[in-house]
Image (cartoon, rainbow, N blue to C red; front, side):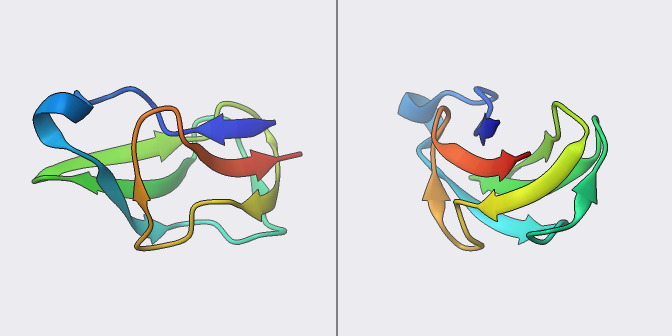
Length: 77
């Protein structure tokens, strides 16, 4: 399953966000609701939660990558 950047902000108003921190690494297990990463948008903190239980297969958007809602973020198997 590919987890996308959630639509929690208006890109036309605030611009893109930047991956500030990853709390999980590839190969680590994850539970539904656990926070995967932190995205900073202007001065807004957006925490992205896992929608499912599983294992982090691949981090697509690395730390310091610029992202916007709908971009692929991480693959969970």
